[in-house]
Length: 328
Ligand code: 8YV
Image (tube, rainbow, N blue to C red):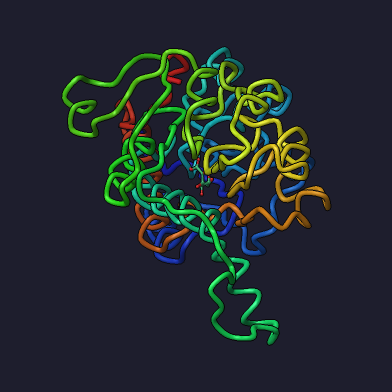
């Protein structure tokens, strides 16, 4: 066991109770401003941190890892996705990487379901209409959307979050279709009455709502390319709560503008927080500011996971959430 406390550097403001506990256990340096650190500041902190606690807003690429001092032993990311970290570069330097899986599953599935409902039923448009003061009262043909019940949902990536979305969607009368590297366990498939599509293209052409729930990896980058998006039916909707890089955002914007795709619900974007004006002004989209996992309960559990990963690692054991590239 290590006698001294590790120097743990947080790149963003975390919930107070998490920061307090981290200061009790470790020699912790906080980011009181909550502004994402600049590249120069990141380069500075990796020179002295034993443990870096970054988030999705920090780019931990090969150059940054090369700039780190030899004392940097652990990158304990606050979040599940690790596409902001160059895992190969970290491994080559002998730096362990951990994340916070599992505790965001239900919250992210809730926001996914909310978007699945909000886009076809025009929830955000309705809210805007009432707030504008222009609503003239109920009308038989007013604000008509499309029914959810009886439609086909195609889930791209049937991991923990995909399954949680499927369970919710069943309650709303959607039939479950999915594309994944391999089929899920037979029992899960039977419980969800889910249909496996080995071909993503074939599934995209046949479902009414597509939900993107796979992690962003080298294999899933631009998975929903312009060609694949063009296979969707003009009456179909797309929901993405995973990562913007999985979908060709410019192509999606074009297809939505031309109504080759009926609508989209997005929580994530290719270059957050930048979103093109064209996408922002489309009437057939619901755009959220990356809040899939944004619950107080979830953030506290994420903090707990980071603390357990750091403490376990510093005590000389394998941290529970060590990220291994092959898992992605
Ligand atoms: C997190 C996320 O809030 O965990 C993830 O992968 O996308 C988010 O919901 C974020 O990553 C925190 O770093």
